Length: 278
Image (cartoon, rainbow, N blue to C red):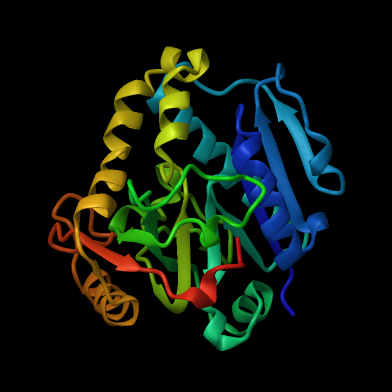
């Protein structure tokens, strides 16, 4: 088995971090998780016991400088982990979960250990929303996937999250600078950052995020809820297969090393086999 690390950085985000530690700890072992708290004023929660957790000086004063500074820091840390003997490093935000299709009957560590990865590997991105009028407010004590059943297939979350050697991530782990991306079969990145209307409204009240200029960003991301609520859900197998092919072949004119999908808005219904994973 390959030695695999997972890294993330958070600020005031225990809600997602708890799930992140629980999921990746189960898949990779807590001793292989590295969590960095953005700001010395942060508290390391008790559920991080057994995890490599550290507080660092606050990075950036606004959304742009914070995002660029974070990913540069994470690229440096990944390089250190490779020097320390790791074979692969997974970089994600705390609301992102890289999941192997349960139909394979493999853990994430088993899947990645068997995969041939030269530089990096990208899971297919799925951005979850809330189907208003059908799905209730999220209950953090229950699996997310037992409460949310619809997601938009999006190029934004087909990220170059898994690297096999020291490389430089672009902002948000969306790409590897000066390298192409390779989308894996039966591997998905589930993004839950904007999957609950009540939580989005609560985030608008977070003075720390508002001071950094996040209000416009959060309003923009609430579009996923509108799309999930208003558009017909399509078949998962058919459209994820199409998206994987399309995103592999199509590039946006401004970035050859990012995927594109002609601006299509495709909502899929998530099969029941995923329900208990996160």
